[in-house]
Length: 168
Image (cartoon, rainbow, N blue to C red):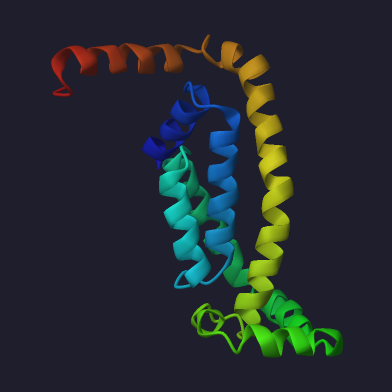
């Protein structure tokens, strides 16, 4: 657990642009809130490897949001059921579900539909909030945190591991 916390601080203090870290959080939220074995998650993973973003932050975000998803499944079901049974959308769903790819995406499942809609709607503000958090952290907290002895000792340990080739 301590290693994951250290890796988060490494990512926050790295030269990565804030949008790269924020996009990792957003992608991890979508993948974590929706059922894992979904076609859209496969597409997001493919995009994540193409785009230069932080995969570690995405995995951490996925783990955190996966825990929340089980609690929210009844809410996702209600939202998805409402969307799928909406009288005004019946024609759209008939056209969409006549396509084999849409059936493979399992969007006719109320939990998949509800969780996808909620996670995409949540990912956009999450991206901007986390982006702002990283900017404020780097602007104000990073300098303050580096004054603590534990962070200085971590830097010394990193230098020692570099010199010895990681044998320490």
